[in-house]
Image (tube, rainbow, N blue to C red):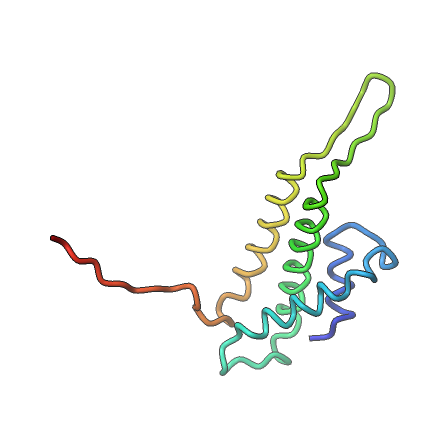
Length: 123
C-alpha cells in the first residue's frame, strides 16, 4: 500500500486539507503496517490494495480522532445567543463506526485473531 494514497483518502474522511493532513502521514503508515500484519498469508496486498488503502485510511482517521479528543479540547463557536459545541465522545463513536465498517469490508482478507475457544467446567 502506498502511504500517499492512504493519506489522500484520510484527508477526505477527516475533511481536512492535504496540508493539514501531511503531518499525520505517520498514522497512515502505522495503520497500513497494522493491517498488513493481520492479512492472511494467501492474500496478495497488491491485488487488494484499493480495499486495503480505504481500510488503512479509516483506521488512521479513527486514531486521529482519538488523539485529538485525548487532549481534552472541545470545539465550539458562537454567534449571538447561538452556541455550537462538538461532543468528542460522539465524534470518537462515529470515527470508530467508520473504522469498523472499513474493517468489515476487508474481513475476508484478515486472519481471525480474536477468536478463542475455551472449555467450561461445571461443578
